[in-house]
Length: 487
Ligand code: NDP
Ligand code: HEM
Image 1: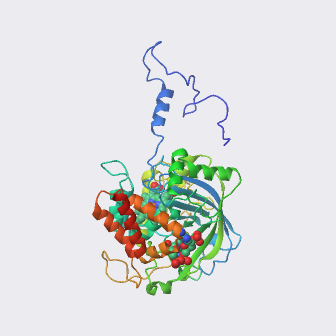
Image 2: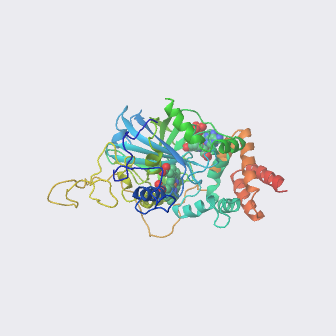
Image 3: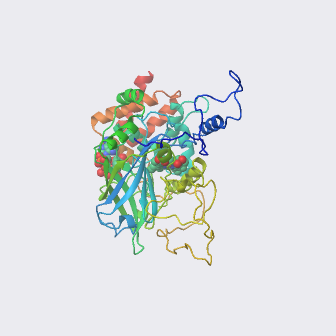
C-alpha cells in the first residue's frame, strides 16, 4: 500500500510542529520527565486508547470491497431497487471471520466462518449477515449467549473446555446437524475464497404488488470448495496464523478477484404452514428437491481496504439493515439478532457508528433527525432537527418496507408451531449419508478426538446418542472410536 502522510513538519494532534520525537523533555540532563512535554503526554494517552472492544463473537476477520451484479429477473419476487434489472451493479463490502477466537487468533481452525455482506444500495445499506454454513447450532436467540459461553474461554481455566462444548451440544440435540457439518471436511476451509456463503435464515421478499415470498440465499464459491484436514490446519495455524487474511489480500492485490455465484430458494408464503418442517427453523435447510436454487447474481471482491482498523475493525453489519422489498421472517433466532447487532455496535463503535466511511450509505444519503453524540461533522448543519416541521426537509414515506405477517393466539414462551418432520436428527443423518466414505472416516476421527477429551462419561454418552439418532451407523462408529481413544 502506498498511502503516505504529506512531507513537512511532524505535528501534534492540534497541528503544531513537534521539535523532538526521540527524547522526552526532562528537568536538566539526567533529570525526571516534565509534564509540560505535551507531545509525550498526548502520544502516550492516544496509544492507550488505540483498542476498541473486539466483537464479542467473530472478533477475528478480514474484509474487502467488490461488486454485486444481477444476472436474472427477480422482480416477480422483490421490489428491491438494487435487484431490479439484469446487469445492475451494486458496490459491496464483505467481512469474513471466524467465530470463537479472539482478535489475534489463528485463521486455520475448526469453526464456522462469518460471511457478512453490505450492499451499498440507492435505497440505503442492505446487510446480509450470514455464515459459511446454511444452518446453526441453536434455533432460539435465548440460547445464543449460553452456546457462545461454551465456545469461549471457561471462567476458571481461561481456556476453551471440551466438557463445556460437549455438555451443551449433548443437551441441545438441535445442534446435531450443525456439529456434523463442523466436524466434516467443510469445518476447516482452506481460505475465505474457497468456501460458500449462506444467508442461513429465511427472509421475506415482497414484490411491487405487495406479494410476499420466503427466501434463502446461497453464495457458491467460483474458486471451488477447498478444505484443510485437521493435521494440515494445525501446521498452518502455527506457521501462518494470518493465512486466510493474507490469502484474501494478496489474491486481490494480484488481480485474482474471488467471486461467488448467488442463488436463492423461494417458497410461496402459502406453503409455510403446511411444509413438512418449520421453514423458519435455522437448524434445517430447505432440500433442493423441494425448492430448487435459482441463480440471480454474481459477487466479486476486487478492492482491499486501505486501513484495516478503520474499515474492517470498525465496520458494522446488522440483520436489521433492510431495504424496501426485503424483510425479516418469524425465525426466533433472526428476531433476536434484529436487536443484538445494533446494540453491539452502539457499545463497540459508538452511537454514530453508521456515519463512519465504511458504514455510511454510499449510494444514498442518511436523512435522519438523529443528532450529536461523539460526532465528526455537524450533521445537516443548522437544519431543523425534528419532524413534522413547517420548514421542509425529509418526511416519512408511508410505504412499509415489507409485507405484514399474520399472527394469532396468546403471548407466551411457546415453542414454534409443530410440523410433521420437525425432529432434530433427520437432516444431520442426511448430511452424514451424503458424505463419501473417506469423509465419514475423517468426520468420525475428528468428533472422536474431541469427545474423548471430556472428563465425564455421561457427557460423552449423551453427545454420542444424538449422532446415533441421526444415523445408527454414525453413532455406532463414533462410539467405537471414542472408546478406542478413552480405553
Ligand atoms: P440437497 O440436494 O438439498 O443439498 C445438497 C447440498 O449439500 C449441495 O448443495 C452441496 O453443496 C452440499 N454438500 C455436498 N457435500 C457436502 C458435504 N460433504 N458437506 C456439506 N455439504 C455438502 O440434499 P438433501 O436435501 O439430501 O440435503 C442433504 C444435506 O445437504 C443437508 O442435510 C444439508 O446438511 C446439506 N446441504 C443442504 C443445502 C440445502 O440448501 N439444501 C445446502 C448445503 C448443504 P455444494 O453444491 O456446494 O457442494
Ligand atoms: C457477529 C450476536 C447468530 C453471523 C455478531 C455480534 C453479535 C452477534 C453481538 C458482534 C457484532 C459486532 O460487534 O459488530 C448474535 C446473536 C445471535 C447470532 C445474538 C443469535 C440469536 C448468528 C447467526 C449468524 C451470525 C445465526 C449467521 C447465520 C454473524 C457474523 C458476525 C456476527 C457473520 C460478524 C459480523 C462482522 O463481520 O462484523 N453476532 N449472533 N450470527 N454474527 Fe452473530
